Amino acid sequence: MSKYNILMDDLKSRILSGALKPGEKLSGQLALAKEHGVSAITSERALFELEKAGLIERRSRSGSFVKETPRLFSKVLVVTNIWASENFGFTDYYAGLMERAENAGVNLEITRISAPDFESKMAALKNKAVILFGFEEPELVKKLKSDKVPHLVMAINSQYSDFCVTENRRAAARELAARLFHDGVCRRLAFIYNPLQTNHRTCLEGYLASSVECGFKPMTYKADEDSVNTVVSGLMNRKSPPDSIIISGGAMPLAAIPSIFKSGSNVKLGVFTENSSVLNLRNTAWTAFYSQSETGRLAFDMLYGIASGKITGAGIQHPPFEILRPLRPA
Image (cartoon, rainbow, N blue to C red; front, top):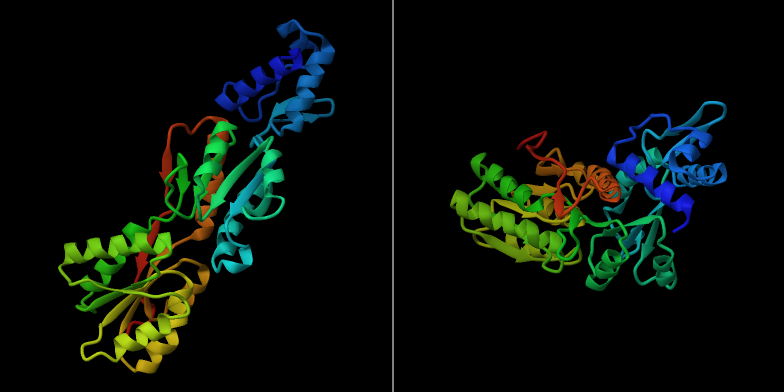
């Protein structure tokens, strides 16, 4: 390893460990050279590379200082298995990520795993970090680990990655069902979900746990955005229809509204803020509220902690959530 790399790695380690604190002034070029037994040219190159890496800032006539928020990677590659335009809630996650990235001076790039240039982007992962959005692929996670690329899974519970940031949907669904039950608005509480969606199945686990804790009989029905109106209509036309329905997902509750209103019943609705559009139902629906923007912010912060070495081992983080009663209860 070259002498400037040895010096640069030593200074980088001291910055990331906190030995050199944010805003602290580094020794000058000549002093560094003398301290480490290298030439002034070598110390100058080390400082240049640290500045280029976003760890220090060099001020004319003042010297070199540790940045308040050192840039540990130049780009975050957000990898998904769908196009952003196909995902109803992608914008909220992206807003949180972008807020943190702009503050840290880091670029964000979204790519699809099936994109023709995906392999070339993976091959050029030097000084980058990766967020797997809404999916995991075991071979990809294995490669990221092998290449020591900082990475995590966002928006779903991970199976293969060591790090994950996602909403606590199981707990939110459990408490949403319990709130509906204890508010006395339901005794026949149905749950509609898409079994093909991992997050919907997680919400189902919470609903079923609540049914045991509260003592109501579970009523579960499968649907997707195209069929949810038909499913709701069928439920409402039964001899003993449900008095309340929890609908999982972000788009499904909105898609089901026509059938709920058309039925003329006083059925109570429970929803999850899988995206900010669901808040349009706040007047009449019990809402499990969590912020996808906050999930994006947490994901960037955790990624930064992984890259700095401050977060090790394995871990999962959840944004806070709360159960909101309708603004205009019936």
